[in-house]
Length: 620
Image (cartoon, rainbow, N blue to C red):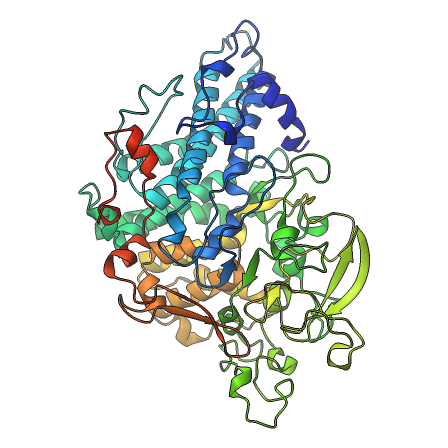
C-alpha cells in the first residue's frame, strides 16, 4: 500500500498542527502529545508516526524542481510557486540571483526544522515503547521504522547544511522554545557526523528492497550517505569561503580525499548489487524510439520516466515523494508548473532558459553541436525557419540527444494538448504566436505559451494524456534516482584515482546511451579534468529540472565561471530572436557573489535567538 493513503489518519492520531500554521522554528508543540496509555503501544502506532514524518518531508522535498531556478538552465517566475493548500512559500524567488534567492528562504528553513521536530517527536516516543513482549518480526519491523525516521531527519539536516552551513542541531523533540532560543549554530562537521550516523543506522536496519512505493530501502540510505560524503568532499576540495569566515569550517584536501573514497564505496555497493536491492535503470536504460522534428506520437523512453502512467513504480527511483491524485488533497502540480495554457490551462511557472538547447549533444558525433543562431543573426531577406543552424529552423534540432526531444519543445515542435480532462489533439509551438492557426503550414493551431521568455518550453513532466487537471497529479516525484548514483560515483572515483576507472566510464556511457549518444571519446576520459567536465555535462541534461543544478554550482564553486567576475556584466539570458530577456548579477559586487554561495540565516530566527550568529557576508 502506498503510504499517502494513511496521511489523514496520521494527522488525527498525532493531532499535530499543520506545518504551515506554526509560528516558530519548532513546528510542533506539546499540544499534540498523546498519552502512552492511548498510543505508542504497537508497531502500527510507530508506522503511523513514521508516515507523519513523511507527510512533513513531502512539503520540503516534492517540489525540489523549483531549486533549478537558482541555476542557469531553468527560469522560475519571480514571486511564484505551487499554491496547493499546506505548501510553504519557501520556493519563492528561485532565480540565479543572490538577493532574490534568500528573501523567503526563512520559510523553507522553518519547515525543514518542522521535519526535524516531527522526526524527533516520533523517535523519542518510539524509543520509550515497551517491546519486550513483541514477536521478533515486530521488533525487526520497528527497527526498520526507526531507520526510516532517522533517514528523513538526516535528509532535512542535509538540506539545512547544504544551504546554511552551520545550523542548530536538535537530537530530541522540544515541547517549547526554551532551548530553541538558546542554542547556537552547530559547526557543520558535527552536524554532518550526526547525519551520517542517522544514515548508517538506516542502512543497518532497512530492508534490502523498498517495502512499497514511497518507502525507502537500503539502497536509498546508501545513496544519500554517499551523497552527503560527496558534498562534504566537495566543500573541502573546492572550499566554502563564506562558511569558513565563521571560523568553524577549515577545508582539508586530506578530508576531501577520504570523503570522496567513502562516497564512491557507498555508490559502488548499490551499482554492483542492483538486483539485490531491486533497482535498475528505467526500461533498462534503452533510448527507445524518437519521432522526427515536428511529430510527437513517439517519444523517447526518457520522457515516459517522468509522467505518472509509465514512470510511477520505476526501479530507477530509489526514493520518491508520492501523491494521491484528484480528490486526495495530496496532489502534485507538475502539469500546472511546467505546462502551458493548452495543457489544462497550466501556468508555465517554470520554463527552460534558451542556453539548455546548446547543452544537448549530437547523436552522430557525440559532441557539442555548433551554437545556434538567433533570428536577428539571419541575413535580411532569408526565412529564419529555413535558414541553416537558426534557432527557428526545426532542422537545426535533428540528430540531437533524445533527452532534448523528451525534455523541451522548440520552434514548430508539437505536443499533445488537453482541456477539461479531454484530449484536444496536437498543437504546434511557435514563439510569440499565441493565437495563430495553420502554424508553418501544418494545419495546427499554435500553443498558447503565455509569458514565454525564451523560445523553448517544457515537455518533461508534462503529461501527454488527459484525465487529470493541472493540479490533480499523482506522479511519484524522484528525489534520488539511480542515474544520479551513477554520475555521483563517476565524480567521486575520478577524484580518488586522479582520473576515471573503467566502471565510471561505463556508467557515464550507460546514461549517455539513453539519449542515443555514442560513448565518450577517448579524449574526454584521458584526464581527471576532462572526465569531470563530461560528468558535469551529463548532470546538466540528465537531471535537468530536478533540483540538482543549483546545489552542484555551489559545491563546485562555479557561479563566477558562469556569471563572470564581480562588477562585470553578469549572466544574460536571450530568447530565440536574440533579445535579452534577463540579466543576473550584473555589476554585482564581491559581497553579492559571496551571498550566491550561502543562504542568509533568517533574521527572524536571529531576533528570537541571541545565540545565533549571522553569516559574515550577510552582515555587511
